[in-house]
Image (cartoon, rainbow, N blue to C red; front, top):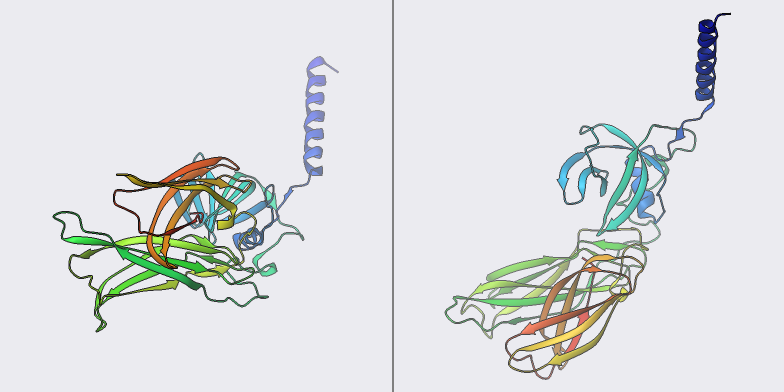
Length: 335
């Protein structure tokens, strides 16, 4: 046999070995056959990093704040740093590399793979949908435990005043998370005529937790009188059995060293500490003042990037005197 023939024979042998090896290899198994089953297990608190899933791309957002964002399911965001080269309606199969929950939505890092379904693949029929309530508990409505308002003194030359309002909303459910809680403040005359209305929406309220929502609205000067009535009503979007471990409660933030600094420029200072093991992107820190038990002042501010265990100083400013005497309360729901 010539040297050339021997080379051809060796090459054919290598190709045959490679082909046989490829035939002997098993495909990557597909863990979730659709986005509904995948999202339901995310909401149930399961760790799905490393799992494979096929989903239908509902919307494409190439320039989102997080990167190239593929929307799927109810609240799924598949995020990548580059264009995945897909189209709306296309079925995509990926392996999950990271998962983060942010105010009721899931942000998922991934890599595209080729996976095959087998007898262990989970489909929507095998699990509950993510937005269905836990069958073991009938949803109870949110409770408005307290609320209040005050009209700020008008500025010189202004034809409007600002009415500040707040509401404290409690979730009495044991396992269900309330999503997008909202308070609506309505200003009206004694005859029922509405002067103005406004609302403020939050992110979530965890089971058994209470959050304080604060906002304000502009009202024409002279419309607020001693007979003016202000009502505050709660509402919400839905309840879900979401991932309870990854979503912080107000009790996961410690607020200490609260002190009033009087003078020509009044301000109140304090320190907030994130007691969870994860960085919290943002909280809405609410300050409420009471006089004889009644809410007489409220204000809020946003604090970002709260790292685990790291104290962050906070300060509320006011150029006029605080209500006297007044007890100060703080609440810090994640935003």
